[in-house]
Length: 107
Image 1 (cartoon, rainbow, N blue to C red):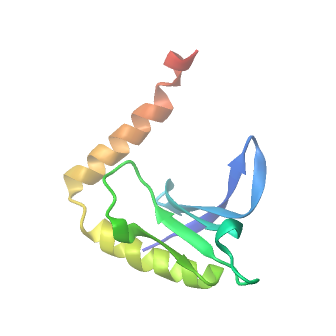
Image 2 (image 1 turned 45 degrees about the horizontal axis):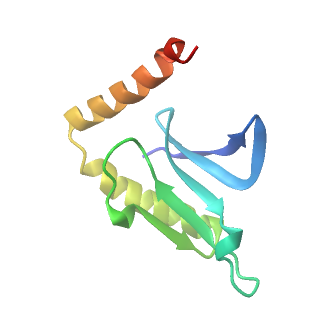
């Protein structure tokens, strides 16, 4: 299953050590260095699966390194994605697509 990381943007600026996780061109989660969770100089990388669906509690966590966070995210994503029915995936995509194509109502 292909997953890629893209730097998280805030007002057009790339955030340091903060990534969106992309699957099939859609953002499905986030991995970031959570400085507020680091203790005694040990980094804490926070990861979270976050498509617009009900998300089980096991779809988030922390890890000691970026590589460990990516591995934990991938394992959780594969488990979560395998639990989705084709209808639930279709509805998820529909919700996201409607949100991005109907921005006219925000004007």
